[in-house]
Image 1 (cartoon, rainbow, N blue to C red):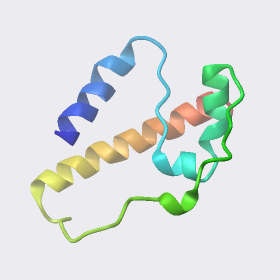
Image 2 (tube, rainbow, N blue to C red; image 1 turned 135 degrees about the horizontal axis):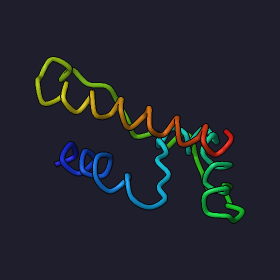
Image 3 (spheres, rainbow, N blue to C red; image 1 turned 120 degrees about the vertical axis):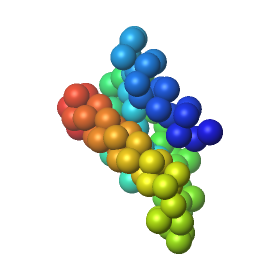
Image 4 (cartoon, rainbow, N blue to C red; image 1 turned 90 degrees about the horizontal axis):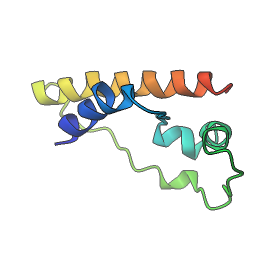
Length: 90
């Protein structure tokens, strides 16, 4: 389900309209705030962002084919978020 949803976002929908992909970690560490403000054309209140809320934990499923497929897509999404941050001058 995760793979199908994000693949569709990346391949289809993000090619039309104005999109900004950001990574959760980029929000937590503050890198996304300037890009989000530029994209939304407004000042954001980032005082509620708590980096201790990082929810990702590695596990031992790396060898499974479904996981590898998701990891490849995840790397594409991260690359897209990095490009989008650079595009907005970050």
